[in-house]
Length: 317
Image 1 (cartoon, one colour):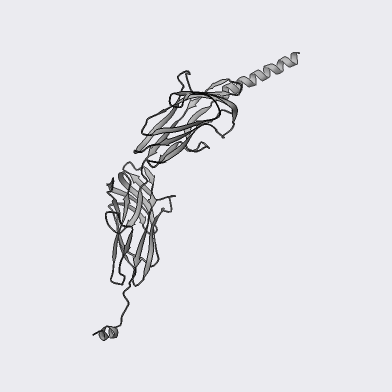
Image 2: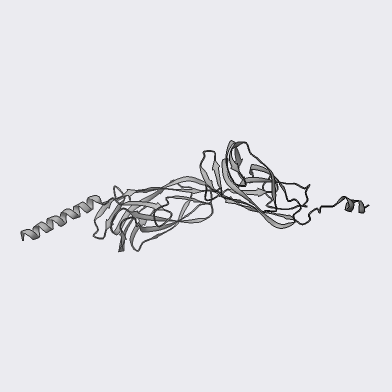
């Protein structure tokens, strides 16, 4: 009997230790693995977020918490794990699950899935998990209905247009294709521009890929610190920020091309990522780097000027 009593004391101590060590977190993430707590998306799109419970090391039987947001967007849908639900995410919710969710190690449990929608630009609007009004802190319950205080995490939503960098055949950045006559004495102007950024542009990083029949004669950058060149990859830090709002573009480079004596149909001029980055980049006036879309332009030379000997020229008269 004494030995059994000692086992019970040991089990009680282990249970107490488990209670002490459980420090659950509840947060909004934009992947089910709990790696991305910052959303960057374009206005007018519906994005999915997940309310995840992590760091609990238990069979999760329920939870109580509330989501506070700084606004600028709407929560247009919330889908909860199967259980008895009181309240809503934005007013405070308590849920008791019909089937406990395993949460052990670094594998989080999805307690709620949400949809986010906004039509206006929003920069770094915070989403914070706080306590349900009936509790002092966010709480997580195990499958024995024992409540554990949890830490509410902070996430953020940024809705903004994705900047575009492209080679344009007009300085207003409206023409992505052109048809010119060729020849050794013909030169074709173009501009590398940023558009659709809705920011003061302070820099960029990108690379220009050209059809081999197109020769880059000159490339004059905007005033700034220039590392590299467009054909190998260039990083630009501008001395004067470029206002890129609405339909107003920002000119990064003024170019001059020659196609020599080549003919071509829809030869491509593409903006891609600088070798040091995964996408083309645009920096704002606070040096925050944003992903950009690299555009592809097309050049057609239907007629090339043929080389002629002096005898051929004289025969025309």
